[in-house]
Length: 447
Ligand SMILES: C[S@@+](CC[C@H](N)C(=O)[O-])C[C@H]1O[C@@H](n2cnc3c(N)ncnc32)[C@H](O)[C@@H]1O
Image (cartoon, rainbow, N blue to C red; front, side, top):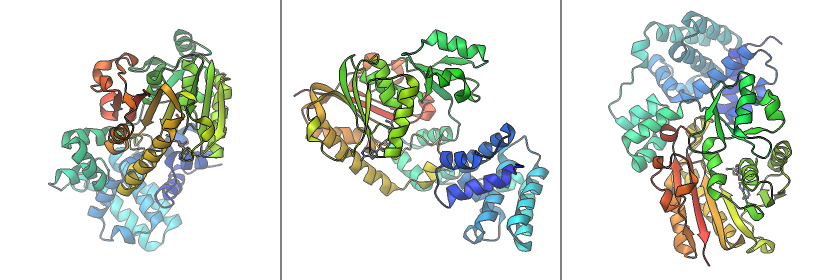
């Protein structure tokens, strides 16, 4: 099929911006018919580029357009956004081509007026780029919001929590694409063997900075097509997430409960740390997600994981006091994942954080009773606000004085980059650690 990459990009952006689809799922859905690697690359570049810079692009449109944003037809708006992204942010596409291709699309999806409008705006911006891309605001919060395309509400919350400089660096890092991290499956191979066999295929890796089992791929290309992936010699996981099993450090032959476990990234790593000896009960509320755990378990050659569909909010009398370790990798606002899913920053509302924090607290209060005395509770999220992380843990510890945070100093490489290790928890940030934003706390149940 002859694919028009920009037209498909327009459809995907409509799906994400109008129907609130997730970028990765929408891309997967629309890319099925795209056979040429160069088309796929261009589409991915446009989608992530437009989403990462959406507020800035819309600011440029509002400077160049006499028509109010709300009045611009959704198809035409996406066509213009794609055009601006190519003109302002991409250097490999000639500006004239960016304008002409956009106008062609406007001809297909618009009418005489909108064709002229598209042509006029894009030509003006191309002609006077300086004028239209300069950010004419004095307020630092507004400036950060436009420059790095994070909504003002979110920037304000972060400035209140982290300060201006930290927030600016964080927002900037959120617009960088993450490095591909892979986890060596030590049940099937070892680090040197995997490094060498990937090297023979031209895939270069370097060691992760904090996690023992992490390799960072320098030139990721169709990595899931390799024999090494198909044979389960590695899996794809961010380094931050690998620290959960590393910090939990469960002993062989222990019993582990993972209450929110799909798609199984952490459960399978826990199995690896346990040398595939013992028992792991991996639960999740969604049946279709449980299937994903099972696929991973099979590929990675793990025998000790039992999966179950179960709502972590529901009390299960049969499990009380039965586990040596329990992981709550909680559903969260995902604000640590903006590099991967830029739509998160655009869609997340302040009230979501409040209701997620309530949900997380209810789950942790329910889960604590499944742990044996002397057992451990690990709480993690892929978000960065204290409200979903350490503040919640502090409230939990106040209400449950039989739990205590434990020193995790010896559980991480380059530990000097974390100031809270002996307090029993860590925070990771994209601009500091070059990982997803993440939080992990480890507690012991003393009585
Ligand atoms: C952060 S993700 C877990 C990721 C997983 N631990 C991993 O490493 O692959 C949170 C999970 O919680 C699940 N979830 C949400 N609400 C739940 C509930 N009430 N009970 C159980 N699972 C729930 C979601 O389906 C989602 O898979």
